[in-house]
Length: 238
Image (cartoon, rainbow, N blue to C red; front, side, top):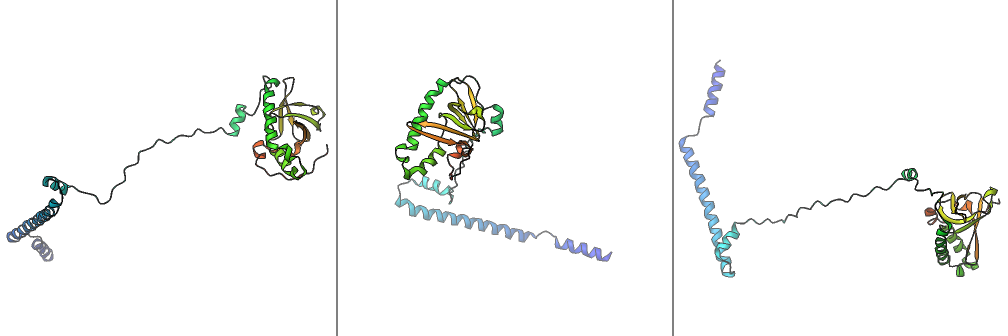
């Protein structure tokens, strides 16, 4: 019990309030420091006014107003405006295109006469693309073969000359759609026929030249064939 009483007494002695004399001296010291700071500020303002005023034509009131302003040393960048992001339309997948039937042509409604101008445009395209007057020479035949393999055949007047299936032989028409494995042609009787490339040989004419296509070498999508390098392959006897 005596120890506890001694501890409480020591705590009371430690936390006693400051004497009045000490508080008065602290208050006086704070007043003196505040007055010295204000005096220093006034001296600084007077020095700046005495230095700047003779060298400028600004009114002293405006100078004092400028002194009171705060000038940041680092200029902050303006906030960027939130630009509206353009939403890209999603393209159809190959499965969706098949479901919609975009890869299929209607069996009726396509006329042979309506496709005749397409054939004329294709002939002009092939004459410019193949450059037959120069490429038919012996030195340029490899270049000619590459161009024939990479050419676009939509609009070509094509005929089947050889095939493992006899019913396809003699079929003739303008190509309206080419896929990886087939040529779809419109015949003179306005009938749409699908000719398989595999095990078939086709011929077509450009001006006075006749060309032969081996379907087994053409089993590639038209878009892929245009950028592909072809190697010489042996032909298959049908």
